[in-house]
Image (tube, rainbow, N blue to C red; front, side, top):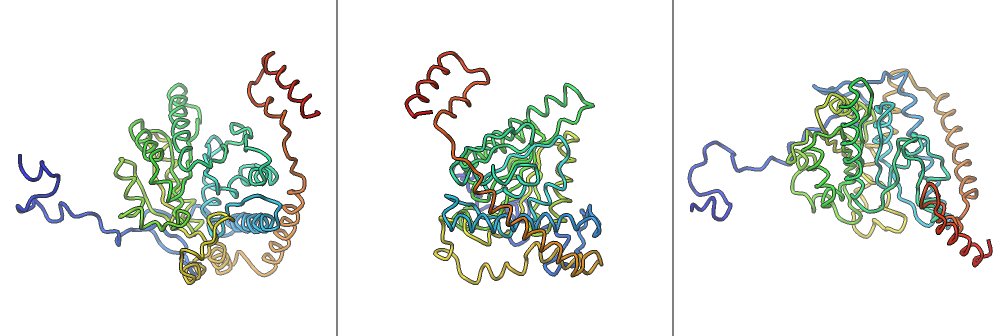
Length: 382
């Protein structure tokens, strides 16, 4: 047996071609960008904006509204009105860009930080905050909203999303004329090291499921930097499963919309899954129980502040003549009013009663379950 096959390392013999055993260079990671950090239009050989400046003002409004929601929820947690919050400051463009690309039958499988996308998909402020107040488990009608339940077990939901996508593929095969939709699955850079996520990649690739993975690479998995868990760019890891993958500027709402639209089109055409690495930065803490000053340099967030997704979109719209001071003033008023709505909403969240758990077991309760419910109600005085 040769040294190559016995120990798994290249032999000292001449290689058959230059670079055969050389890994891809992490330094050469092309990234899709349509708006640069200053808000100027950037050209990409494969993608163009799907939204003109006059129409893109709605994207800016959505990002501003989401940021205000996040700011208010963080403050509410600090005041003790929420038990916990997972901030999304700096990641607004990813969620708004993805939502702008979704079709009427597509389903979203979130992790635990997609609050903005939840709002845009129709979930109420109260229901989102109720999870972080400990008032509910987030069991809304996922089929109706097409926005599935928050996942606090890192990476576990990716298998659910791929399973749903496999079902969508079967529905499409049964009725080729129907729009059966695509499953869009969010996870973070830390989750890519979880076994469940890798298994999800295996199934998605093997069955060519209509799934789009959105990996939100915000550089930190709680206190661990991304380069500690991966020696190559994350999008290159998905290629290893046979999933076409691309890195996108996650602070560029136009790029996120264009690439997501392309990935969805691939899935609808029966070309299987796509992996999108949304390259961004977590400006705040992992959650409000975390202190990022303990593990990252103070100048790091400042370096990313100039890449802010809202500022660059404003700059582009102003340069295009689609945005002015009057419109900005109206937007500021709208977000201020929305902030007041968020503060009022937290007081409307009702804490659950013990007997409520019995209403969430079967669609049609059994006699035994009703008897147990009555007994518990008597014991707790309800």
